[in-house]
Image (cartoon, rainbow, N blue to C red; front, side):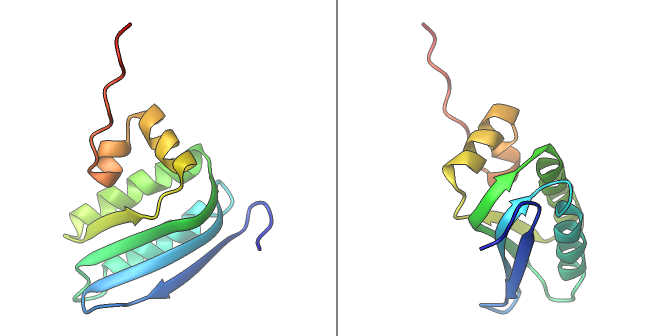
Length: 116
């Protein structure tokens, strides 16, 4: 278990060209820059085709964490590397939907709000 402002990153390479990072803890002002640096370094490794951010154990994401996810999307796209956010908790999906970034970060088109 992690405390506030702690993010543990665990990298694996399940298939050639794929890299997965498991995130445990908080993606916030204190921790997000380390994720950015590690993902950028991984995207620069020759042969990297896809990076998966496994969000199953992500406890919290603040506005800085969201900004870093957007920077990661931009940097991986520029490097020709696919990015996926897997096992997103409902609170992260809600943050992405509220901020209008769900489609950009996940490829999922948010459901239209009903007009009453």
